[in-house]
Image (tube, rainbow, N blue to C red; front, top):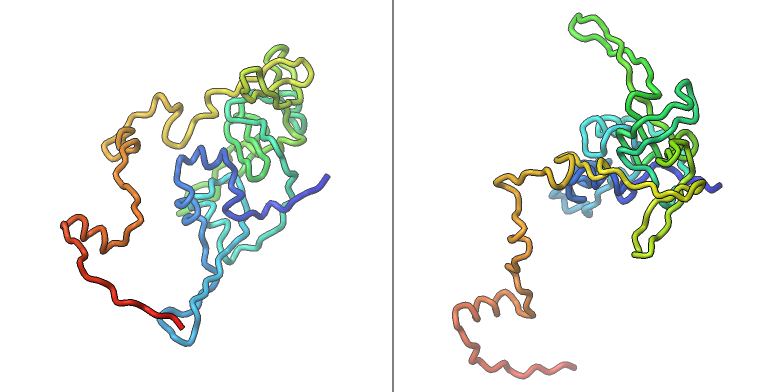
Length: 254
């Protein structure tokens, strides 16, 4: 099977990651932006040139966080990670999955985080690894348990709600034209959980409370700008009631 490199640019940030962020794409782009080299400013001897970092290493950290920024610093060594492309993503936050590898093989759990950039899911309370938290300022080091990511292509499988057994999933269309997940073994529908709609700001869209600085729905629907085929000067003249009465001299082209 054809493999692609996982060192991706901003355009390859997963759709589920951007939906969870609930942030504009331009903000995520600015937060990931790293300038490798640029020409001196205000120097007429150089043309303005800027070289930006185009390849990033995606981990459990979100692309707009400081942890992601530190791991993708200009001094860090980038190692290639090969990734199997997935055409139709079938795993969402809140799904019940069965682990197929490791010491927790055969156990079932709930997906707590989806890392689409690496084809990873993190299952709450399973596939854990003990890590030592380094001490600081003379404090004693601690050991904590942390969930490790699992590959959706070979290490986890969705659970069929009809018999609670792992299964393969297919995307099909209903008579109404809705795209749904279906178990390939039993043909039963596997609905997308409500936790898949959770973002950084709210659990579900209905539970979100608007604040004073939020843009109201009526403001979005109201048309405040009407585009016209006029220059700025022409719009000012119309607003002030000025009429152009001068006659332009003829122009000849040779």
